[in-house]
Image (cartoon, rainbow, N blue to C red; front, side, top):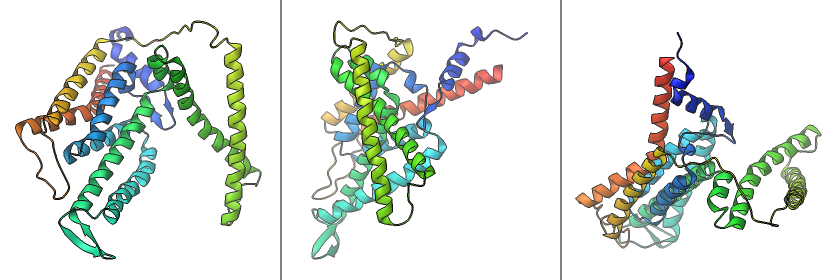
Length: 320
């Protein structure tokens, strides 16, 4: 006799999550099901350390965690497009620094009479790692922190800012979808030329003008709809399905503890690292190793959550 579905709550949870679908190449995942406040604290924690740390180990851990999380969020065909963007961006940032900065005491060669130093190359690669890591985490945050979550977090504290953020996040994918429709329609009509640079520029200009008109019309319709519904005329009420669960509390506690160890170690100088005038030795004291381990776990936490959910899903499927 087949057991009722109620005896497998995790199966229902995973099926509901998978059934949510994919929007804009971003799949709805288990980590996105956490409470918005937990997600906000987590992303701010990782981004703060990634942006303000000059230690190459912490920067590399942030980039690795961002790569793993992006891979779990995206469809496979979207990963190739990201690689085509991030890899040239990485080398562009890495090579640009030594061309303009000539600090350092270890010259490798001279270019137009200016020394190109080892320290400048190392610093350029470190900057590139940091930039890519921050971009990856911002992309993950934009995919996970949807407009309804931002409105839930800031709707009561800063209602106007929350509304603007939610509308902006909703408008961007709408703009891209509408632009694809306009371009496809013009191609079907034979107006989207593919011959010559001038014809391509004119075709792009027609699409741009059409999108400007659509944006203004959409803004007027949105304003009229909000006015008709009485926005701003009285006290705003809201409804939300977000509830704090035991899993949220556990992940929030773990994130705060890991962040605390990382910040305490950085404040104590355990991860201090300099590139100029000479590349310093990498700190490997017990406190430094503890900071590396704490931030490494913090960076891969979303990936670990996704792996666990996938294992739970496969386990319960094997029990059916």
